[in-house]
Image (cartoon, rainbow, N blue to C red):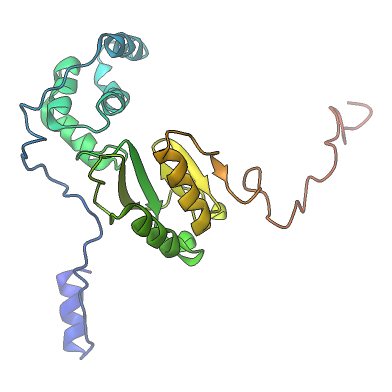
Length: 238
């Protein structure tokens, strides 16, 4: 709300309350820390330098800086998160101002700018998931591994954050762990997933309730028969 609109409400005797609850565990700005500063060691591996050459080949001359997102993603996959030294290295490779790289890294929440665990848990906390039990899933995670959103386990195995919609509302509640989606969760499913990951095994991804994808949980209501072949419904004279 604008200041002018708030003042108008107050003049009419309408009470205005401001909620100062934090909506994110992360700062939008960088603050040097012992583990994240311009001197934090970071160099792309030889294999990733070859991948960068392949990525850059997709962009015409004069537009190589458009590769900033995939190269930042490559840095994150190598280092698990993106320290500011990695952003500086991306800026050097692309011959672009460091600030332009910072702008991209701080805008997209896919880039982790603080250390995360080997398994980074991103629990969807928006309306459909919350209505379907996301708070119960959160409680199960906190009880199982002993951390809260914004924290990491002491062995650096797990880290946790609450995120906005991940686009799997029909499979709510759901969680993204690294690159994988786990959907249609119950608390017992969440506990099993954490146990499997801690044991070094990868649990089955996708819906955990037997669904194949996002079809109606009570069964298909359309497209229940074989699809017609080519030319179906076309006039005989065409």
